[in-house]
Length: 390
Image (cartoon, rainbow, N blue to C red):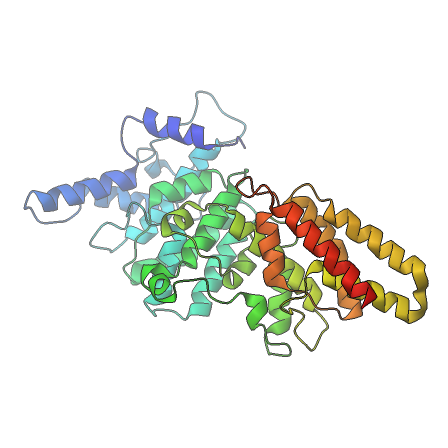
């Protein structure tokens, strides 16, 4: 299957003689309304809607009634594999047909991403929050385009019943990139859209809500499942792990959330969450402790090792490991060293300040704060030696 990047999407859209069918249908409806005529779809639109609903569950390119509805055409000859853009349009058309079926107004609504649509579905109380979340996460974890389409075919009728629209042009582009590198941005956009607190809540709060590690309740009914979900994000790009979406607290402007922006704040929170989950497992007390810097934690670990009879060699080994952490060139290298340190803290029951850790990950290689890393190194080194000697 050929890849489909954003530049191809732009060329494909610009090169089409006509708008996509879902765009055309919406334009005709709005034109009738603006001209004072009865707001309804023309006969040719309703006829073609019946045609594309026959394509649901069928192989792309095999449904004769859909051929006149496509705006992306197959190349001459018999291609070995259908282009990703053609497959994506086939699936988008069938989803649009299912969604628009029996709806009296256009369901194609520019600017409404899938995550936003699911948030509105949850707010409509047509389904429980957990039910909506489960369906969105199922779609987000689809292994390929075909599986994604299957999940969306079950979700779209629920949006129709709640009178909630979706930007089908945007969905087409997301589906066209699903089997390529563009998937990560799509996943992050869906997750951030779905967890958007809205301007009103943001104005009331004035600041980010307490992070997950500060509110975690050891021994709670869902604690084990939550920590497992967070551990699944280890080594993954921030915002792309659907199981972690409910646990992010990073504030971000709605426009940036809608675009799926990868910010330093989000990346730092993601790493801190995965580290906390690894650190917290098996412990009955919370392993987040304000004031316990990585230097303090590593120093306490060295002191415990020495007191346990492991001697000076254990202290020297931990000092060497901690020294390597301090020399990290960027936040990615810092995160890698922390992933090696946290299991040791877990085994020794040594706590760590995850608020401080997140701040360090956010600032370590920030070009706007050129002295942040050196100041953290000095402070943590001092904390380490204080903890080992006190």
